[in-house]
Length: 494
Image (cartoon, rainbow, N blue to C red; front, side, top):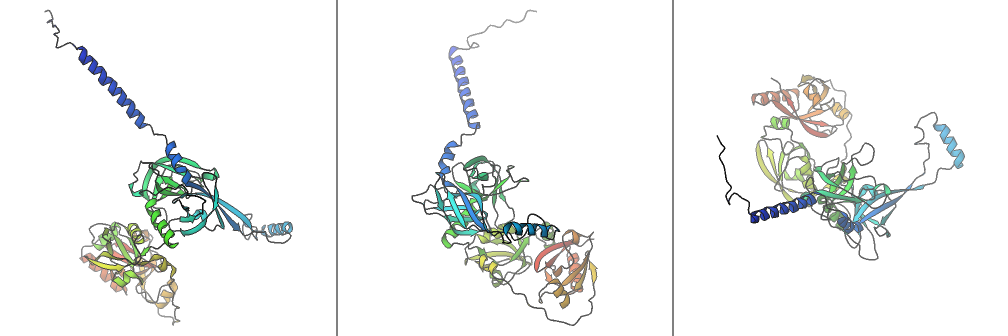
């Protein structure tokens, strides 16, 4: 059978008009592909670097160091060679103590106003006798310290320049996204002005400070970069380069910059007052963990649990130990870190509404905030213990992996507890118990169980029975160690 013949009609053929149209579309697609490839390549950072470099400065500090009077750093104290090195030093110095010497250090900073305000790290200039600022043009000026804040490691300096200085502005660090390009500038290892590029690796990092809010970046940050700026692609400062994580002292791509939204508040206060003025609530708090939430019958593990209320704004307002702070000034409290930062950022003397959960019910109290710096400067005086006759040894009992005994005056003195503290002293802890795993140790004092004060072993046993009868699987204990309180939830078993 012959195959069927098929003839092409005019509609099956490609007309010249369609051919030209297809060729045009291919050409357009090629152009678009070239544009996409061009966009994928990072744009040169040279124009941005040229624009912002004049505002970045090198900082050199000079400090007088007293001459050493002993062979420290050569041999350890108490070494049999100590006398030998002392005689050697005395013979060479004619018996005189070494003269004081000058020590210098390098760092970075940046100008934030045309009249000469400069921001850097506190550790760059701490203890310095003299501070010299070197500008991009080579101009050198002496600087004075306006104020410092060790809590955020920020310092504000001032120079008197012959003319207006180039400066940069702060950006919104909260707008920075993980993956955004950033530029770090400074004086690494004393090599002079240097630029490194990277991305925002993470946000809201905490290292060790109460008010930490660091941007993590892989832009190269080395010694000497401290105090220098971290820029976004708009040339705004979104961080102050402060620390690196490194096993060898050099950059391995894990650097930390204090977020600009923290820095701007500190700088504004230093400029206005020469010191910081943070809000103070006056409570000791801990995070609400899942086991604590279960022990308290809370729906979720969030908020800040009050472990102590010393004299201060919170006590005056009626807050109590065992309250869970749910919101502060209308903002929901997720954890203690967030609450501390929010309180610290609040205005001293402001009246704010604090919502707490107390005995299963929420209530709102109005608190007039104090000033944290004043509270930290006031020392509490300890009362002298009175001499008492030796009492009989109290009865003890093992409960929940703990051997406990009622407090006596002698035990209070031995444990450094205030005369007003009542409760049970821990004399032994089973190392295989949950109590040991959660950090309870000999010398701890249990003052509350089930958010009720306990004075005797019977009180504790009653709280355990009540918790079991109420269907609870754990019991919340308030434990004090060296005066510091914290809540611990212990399982009740079957």
